[in-house]
Image (cartoon, rainbow, N blue to C red; front, side, top):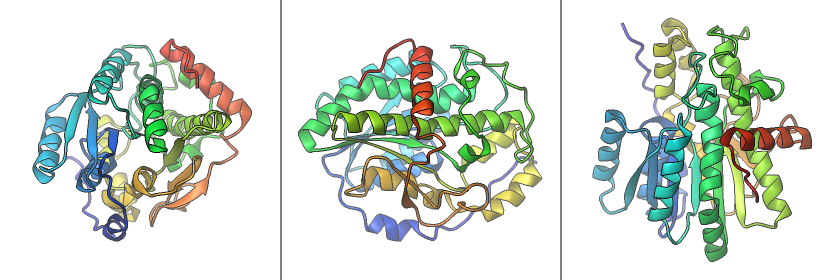
Length: 337
């Protein structure tokens, strides 16, 4: 019998959503909106009046979710952009499409999409499938549309770049270069223990640490330029989404263990509060980290999202330089801010 995710009611989402301002006139791009936090964020932004670009790998699931979003939000503009984050070529095509759709600029880029604890396999570009999906392709996408964010920041007073991390960043001590290089398929195998250093989870933790470190890089560079672009990051705590279902199907988590573990979780809507704070809350400061706490496993798993400072484990000159240089090397392009 396949794993079936639990249905957990939302506790905080509706009151938070009711507090948000209109997003009329804003153009927002979100990756990974087929389900989970990305779907919740896209739906909320549409209801608040934004023009929303949804970036997904072409599939029946993404088409169905697009149809649902269109049906429920017929008075706002939703624009699909094909984007397979396991392919740099696809990301570059998506970057060109965004430029066609957004000649007047882009207000928010939300790098939300992610995979978790997948097998040790390479992408077509030879990188680890988790690192390319979760970080490297988002790094490339941000570089490709950065001029559009600058245009909006100059015209409207601000723009925002949002990355989606996880409490799994706490499972690894530091960013290791080998995970950012062309070592896909040769990064430890398929051990699936969450608590005892299973290689699938080590690779995942590295990607989530990279998401936070990328935000630290952007915040540092943008601050030096006195830019009106804000760099923000969020994590969802333990949130019930299709992410767990995909991981179970791929062998990264056992069905019974997942059912037990996710009894401690919160709803996908409540899990989206972090990125929605980053997207829509007025007067946020660049460099903030939104989530239900900043602890590790079992100490920051659910609750209202609050703003915290970036952590010194990745917000330090050595880690920022390592992440930026290896990411530029991976995409084969300099990213100059």
